[in-house]
Length: 384
Image 1 (tube, rainbow, N blue to C red):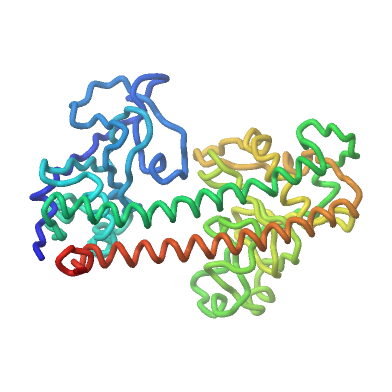
Image 2: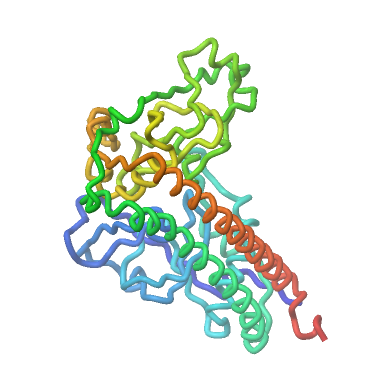
């Protein structure tokens, strides 16, 4: 079983630094980490002349090596690399797909070699000195065939999960009509009339006794699900008694109202348990005639409208003014109809949870197979 340094079988090309003065309305899109991870599809463009090596074509292998460490197949249009990304070119005796999987297999190993205190990163030498299994080309292609089949199952699971996520917004439109136009003529009221707005805060980090408990303290980093029953950080009842932080009741809708994420997304969730929030968020506690699940989904459907309400603070960060939220008009169908919608949402969520579990199982199977492949366990000599 031969292991070779990646630097011997691949060339790592670092991107260029682009300043706002380089940005143009047209030209080549500058490929940044957020364009790889899907956390921001917006491109900046440049007409600046760059070396041919920095041009990215569809199918090229790219590595984000700063802040986020991962490898990607680029499937977008022709572009140019920024400084936080490597383009990786395989040697003539290396299958590009095999190199992709080889890089995937060492991401965890390389994560332990990160440098820097403010922005973690991995230098090119770390990649080049990392050793991977490198059999003959025919054997590489055989292993690629095995891994690509397993990866294909993961891809299908993810696509099914994505389609399932589209069901609830479609159900909302079907039952209540487009809230942007209110074609069914439901009564309209403002969010300020329909809910009580609660603010959040951050307990003193110097008081370690505040941060020992099981009461979720939700911040924007937790806002990745539609219904929240936990958070990364926790506080306790003592914190509530000694600070101005308030307990947000079950069925409240949480909205991120400050942060750079508001450039492209306004995160929204509903509380499934009593919890607290930080100062970059608001909680909307609905009146009895408004169900929390209905409020959650009408705001999700109205996401483009919310984004249009986002403004820029003096220091450059994005913000969603409370006064604008309070004045936002939404349709209010009868509570009975809202409850029917909530019940159907619960049924759909049950299916989504099953699909999520199936996706996680497929991902675990692929990762295990990837590990075996680069430990030499899938070599023809080892499997016969």
